[in-house]
Picture 1 (cartoon, one colour):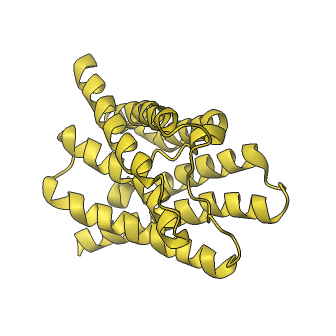
Picture 2: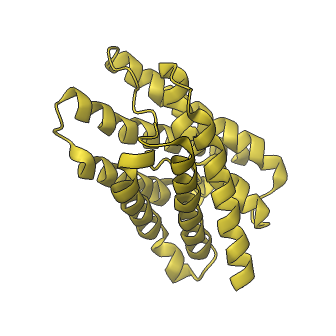
Picture 3: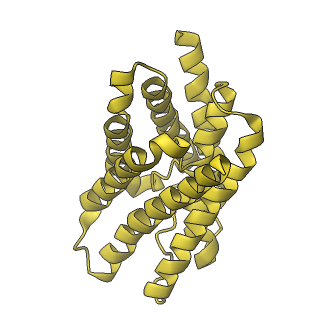
Length: 214
């Protein structure tokens, strides 16, 4: 029962992340730029913060397969939970993209992450962005209780910051589930490999440096 609650929380949290974040991208396109790039970045940061505070005590609010894998590498997450967590995250993301497809059937990309430059440029950017994000996550999640109280604010701020400056080039996904859902539902999977691999490598590197510093 406890595990089911965790998986449900991960699905709900990832649904909210994809629905609000990619929803902001879609609505910005549909409204002729009313949300703005800054508004999209703020939306991603705020929804991540909100879900961490809402669901952190239930599932840890990973909302991201790369984060789940990185916590396992850090020996802070059991191996048997990896697949159920990732399945829950992907399911939540897919449900969100399906809902957005229903609401905005004419939208082509549904907020899918696409490189504005070369694939290698976006791959390196996504790797570094996720490295920084995981480096912050592992520190605030593994510190004192006082530090943990600010985890949502710290992590949401990093997401907002990175989406703000890197979003126009690589999409600043940092999350395989966030990228997989709109790509799969929209049928635009041509660059998906970047967003499935780079965040996992970057998150693993973030944990590696954390271990070194400890």
